[in-house]
Image (cartoon, rainbow, N blue to C red; front, side, top):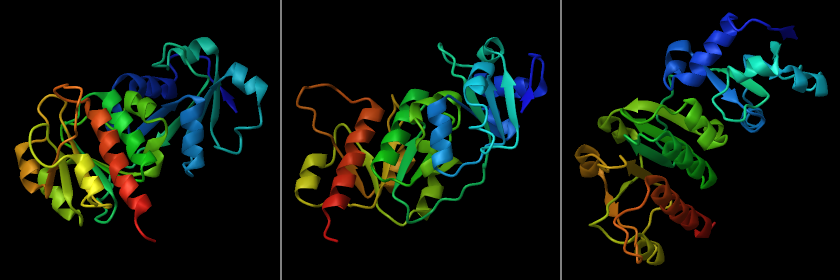
Length: 261
């Protein structure tokens, strides 16, 4: 264990950049996880941190619990930890992880494609739904919010560590997927509940979720094998993209669960 008392410590400067700049992890080659829940979610998936940073109070309450997790454990005051935090109520622990940028598309993984989804909360919520409903891969097109930014990580609640995540993809990259490509549309295509009831919804597929205002781009829409509508008997014009994703992914998961073994 090493104590850090200076706010100008190089490690703390790096963490502040990671916490404040959504794309800093690409430049730094590091990811900052803040909070007990995210850190434990990473450990549960076999992720080993490069460094652990915690408050003096947490260290005093459990001085040996974290020594087996990582060779580098740093302790700072509560006041100094607050300078690292992006939360209104700062946590007491964080991990610095190595960022593995070069992930490859796995052709047979049930997939969610994010086409320029820009709100970090939406992106994190979709990742959380994807993980919950058995989708093993998320492919983010160029223009999508940074998957490993602090806000997306918090919204994802640990979902990142159970999936293959690809960033900066182009439409032509989707040809690598060996499964039907499905998009949502507010005005054309069969209704999702009808496809499910008629057993015409593929259990293994790639769902495309589009930009909050513009929807799925024309290039990807032209590649889709199926365009699907979500019934909205209440009369709203459209659904939030994260809500639409949860509905679609749950429908596919239901098909898989009900399929004969």
